[in-house]
Length: 105
Image (cartoon, rainbow, N blue to C red; front, side, top):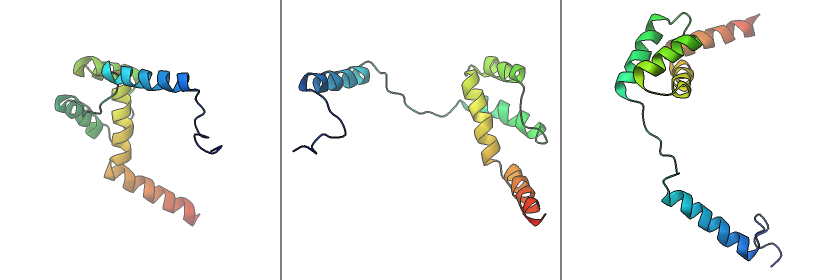
């Protein structure tokens, strides 16, 4: 019996408050649903990325322009570039070749 609920030690009144709070957040629409960015937004950023493949790191000012032009947040712009650099096959190949060169030295 001592091991029951060992991970979460709630008094009965606290447990009810926790459950009610979680349910209230759900009812108020506070859960976050993942969705894709608008296609127009990603097309604009992809075009810039392709033109700047040698240095695909937009400045803060450029990110602000993207944010204003596409109506997405600066955080979303930054995350898109981080993810796109990681997923870009050309950059991945370049990183792999660089790492192999480091190993042969």
